[in-house]
Length: 267
Image (tube, rainbow, N blue to C red; front, side):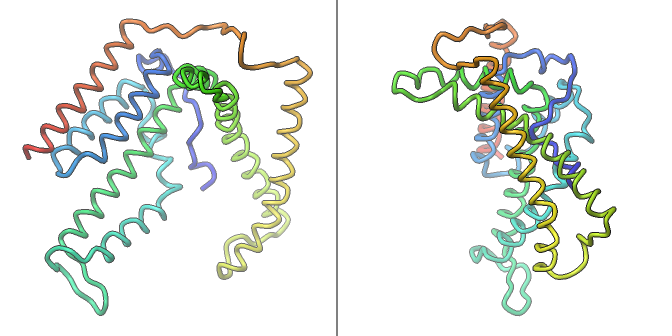
């Protein structure tokens, strides 16, 4: 399960998607995620599926590697489906058993909400797969730069997000090592009820928190030793500059949204 969490990881490649400006990927990803909540029929989701499939193909990231991240949220998807399926009372009743009723509106909502969650995860994961943490930090900082006029700590927020993304795969690897070490010592992490399983996680969480605090302290000391000072006056080794391909990506994303919304309203 730990190895199935792929968020925050970067997949090195030389695709056209990797070479795009990080600001383009952030903005286009947000537009795509918002568009998923605009659709009211299957037509819009078909266009969204074709668009996502095309982007995945262009990214050259293996589809199995992208889908692997869904394994960690299977329970969330199941809970979402059940809640929407049985708690939606409007519509024609399709199936009834004791106090549970399944309506056509509940079934429709459950299907659409499941598709949205899956595409939200795939779309956001694809952005991190094709963007290095440093580039992602620069892109976020550049997009939030106008907020500096109201004294918003843009650089600090971007740096915090970058460090958090960097620490995700490190902490996952550390968790995997600790779990294997505890299992080798005879720890039982699977059997028992929920309370017993929660207690069994204590020998994992304690050393994990200690390791996380130690890594954070080492990082802070390393940054201070190098006289790191962010914010005003700091220059970039690779300044972000829009190119022709970036404007084309913006145009394609806007055309996708317009076309998908039109198809969604027509179908």
